[in-house]
Image (cartoon, rainbow, N blue to C red; front, side):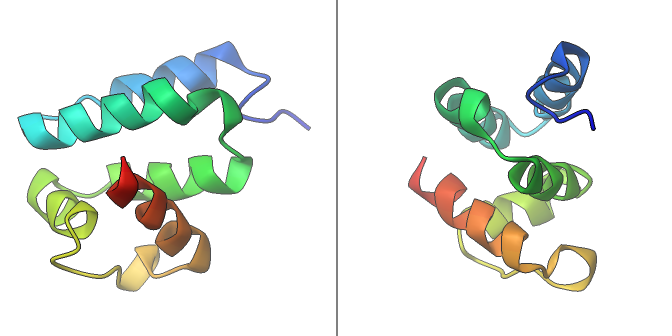
Length: 88
């Protein structure tokens, strides 16, 4: 089974998707990936991918703790990744 860490194309795609129109999101996500990309689990990559599917403002609200995940992102591994992002 191919994991995120074993596929350089997947890692590059994730980093590209982390580039956001809202500068604050871009800075937080880039800093997080710079520090943690090499040790992300596949569950964490899935959580980050789900978060990156959100528009910039809802994503910023989640990162800053002004909102909590709901719908498709209300999953334990998304909550866990958000906790890490909030510390970044």
